[in-house]
Image (cartoon, rainbow, N blue to C red):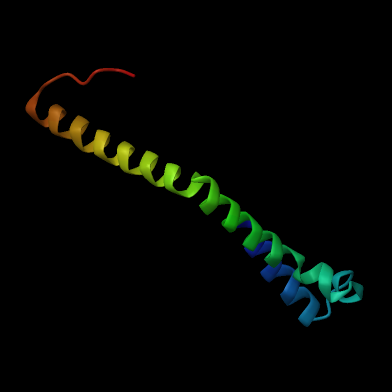
Length: 79
């Protein structure tokens, strides 16, 4: 996501002719988009994206369980 943001900022700076980016070659300006594609391809291939989604879902599930236990007056276990 950082590569995408950087690419958009550099693209705007090149389009609006802001120094020093205005003097750069286009392939330098567009390279963060290629890096973003490479990152997303690697993240999907390696399972990183799925792992982060599962961790987020588990954290939400544990928060719901803790909230329910607290509402019932049962002490939650500390991790």
